Length: 188
Ligand SMILES: NC(=O)c1ccc[n+]([C@@H]2O[C@H](COP(=O)([O-])OP(=O)(O)OC[C@H]3O[C@@H](n4cnc5c(N)ncnc54)[C@H](OP(=O)(O)O)[C@@H]3O)[C@@H](O)[C@H]2O)c1
Image 1: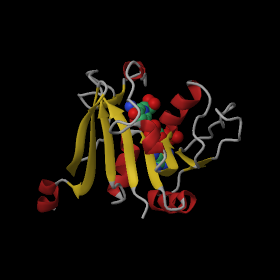
Image 2: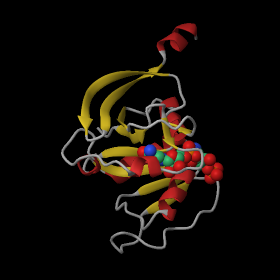
Image 3: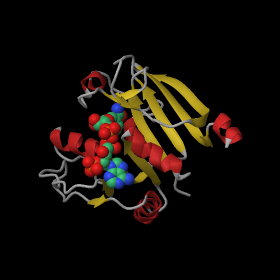
Image 4: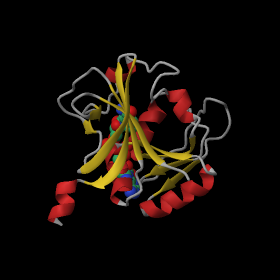
């Protein structure tokens, strides 16, 4: 059964980008191959990806499109397709503003049993959580604070810590999403 995984790197104060969408603070550090949350191993488990418009625009501005997987880009706007891809093959991208459950169904078909990666941002991961569809968070915390920026996951959720380890400069952790924060469930 395919899982929906939010694989992401954040600062210790909970931001995935600075207020001007810069990731320079993150690019100074690398996850080591073979360690917990290492990118290549994770990518091997993924069959489809989804990202928001800001993340897509960041990717377009920073080099060729590097994803060979079927990708969904959530947007209300008409955005350009990548001019270049890392392999030279056409990028496999659909722009969508469909309801998250429908996007999830479409991704499941494309992923053929592999997991689904919510690339970001945080609110999009939150939309999957709102729909009860977010299974795990693979969080790599960089030794950085920013004081402000794009939040990693602006929701109130209970999580279960499944694994934690050091990977290079990062604190690498894996969490299972249990659902709405216990206190909110009790109140509701
Ligand atoms: N540190 C990391 O690992 C990491 C990972 C991912 C992203 N990032 C960075 O974090 C930042 C994230 O930016 P962000 O917080 O603005 O989030 P985002 O999810 O990348 O973009 C948000 C935009 O996506 C569109 N969108 C989201 N949900 C939608 C829906 N259900 N239907 C239609 N459109 C939808 C809307 O754009 P429109 O309505 O304008 O089209 C919305 O304003 C970016 O700078 C990105 O590069 C960092």
